[in-house]
Every structure is written in C-alpha cells, then in structure tokens.
Image (cartoon, helix red, strand yellow):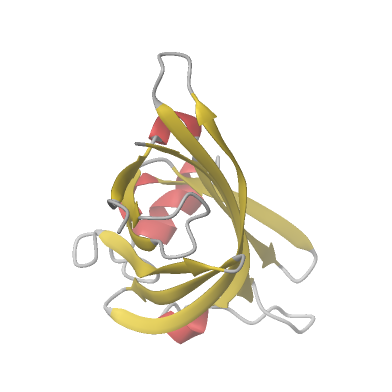
Length: 170
C-alpha cells in the first residue's frame, strides 16, 4: 500500500476569485487574500484526495473599501461571528465534491477541478497545480441581503461564480 502524502496550499502561488452580478448588468470580481488548506492523497493523480480548506472572511477584497466593509458586515459574512468559510471534501475524476460551510450553513457542493500538473519547484520541493471552477447560490448559505432597483431587478445577483488557482507543496 502506498504511503499517503500531505500537501499544503502555497498561498503565495494560489488565488481565490469570485464574481457576482451587480445591478443586473455589471460583474464585480473579488478575491480572498488569506486562506490555508491541505490535501492528503496516496495517488499521484490525486484520485483519492481528501481536502480541507479554510478561507478567512476578513480577507475579502473587491478593490473597493466601502463594498468590502459592507460584505464584512452582518448583512453578508458577519466576520466577527463567522470568521471562516470551510470546505471539506474529495477530488475524483476532475470533480471536487464536499461540504461548504458559510455563515454556519453547510451545503454539499460539486465543482469542476483540473489537475494542471505536478513537478519539482525551484528549491526541489514537489508541487502540484489545480484549477477549480464552479457556481454556488449565495442565498443557499444565508447571504440574503439585497435591494430592489427602481427599474426592477436587484442590486446583488444570487449566483456566485468561483475560480481558484491552487498550488500545493509536499
């Protein structure tokens, strides 16, 4: 039996992005700047990988300080009460499946995930790369704040598009 390898996320070479419609016409892009996680796998192709991932809600950045403050407030992430977003799941057949917890609401999610490669890093360490894409509905996780616009529609869309570039080191 092969020995399990513990991989850790390299935050200096990884990023977490999200996109959401604003005013029904525009797309707002944001990132989370602080996160950590690990992957445990016995297989080089990660077909048996078990993933644990934590995002710090206080690190949200949409390149607009007032919007970031609103997202950190009780209208959205309530960062004082809910400092983390947590994912625990598995990788198999280009799919990342597991439980996502936001604001103490846990729901199953399935995201597309591609192993983009493995190899040696600059200092001889073993590295692996993944790209992860998917969508969630923010209301499923208790993120329900919104305003109706005078012309119809809402200020913040329900669908959140996710894109992660993840680099792991073993």
